[in-house]
Amino acid sequence: MTIKKTIDFILTLIFPIECLGCNKEDIYLCDECLAKIKIYDQPPVFEHPLTHLNGIIYATDYKQKLLQQIIHNFKFRYIKELAEPLAKILAEFWTNYINSVETRNCASLQNDKPIIIPVPLNKKRLLERGFNQAELIAKIFASQFNYPLFSNAIIRSKNTPHQVGLNKKERLTNVKNSFAITDPELIKDRIVILIDDVVTTGSTLEEIAKTLKQAGAKDAWGLTVAKD
Image (cartoon, rainbow, N blue to C red; front, top):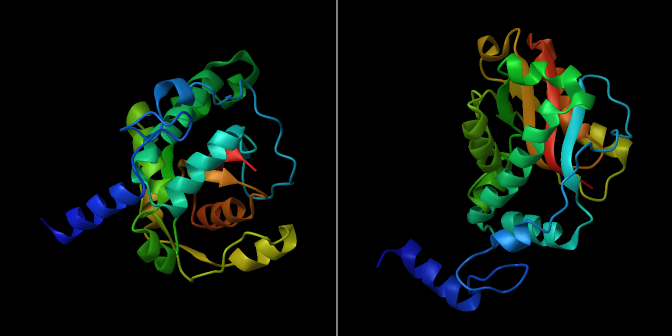
């Protein structure tokens, strides 16, 4: 037995695989519990002013307790399998959103084949977690809609502290000049959709959008599973 398999076996003994909603065995989230998460038809207008983003769109409300459990276990218990239900939430929302009459002005996002870029994780956090949660969601989402995925088009050029507990101004300062484009040709004149799990003030997405547009991107949108 390899070291990884041994660790996985021990973790399964300590933290048995069971549904976060109903404790059904051998699955982290069953279809019945996933269906209980309320998804927006039309998300509320993002309340923070945006300078560089064309808009921030989100699928659901983070205040739902089960959703909080899913995201917490995904990010802090490192349960990678939870990327799939979160991507399903995002995909179900997006399918309805881009085809609704009210958002027909956003239909070009579908027609113009936008490129998908997950919000990058700083190197320290990536080493701690072993994966970028936004990237796992983005891969599934992009595959479902046949969108090009460029996971490495933008990187964090410096490590920054967590945004948790910071106000809007502090968040903006914290992420200022933290991102860099690896290949401007990948994003030149393209519509970019930035994927993340949760958005709060939009400061990180705004800073990335600024970097993208300075490098020649046509438009930049934020698309997240939830709004906190």
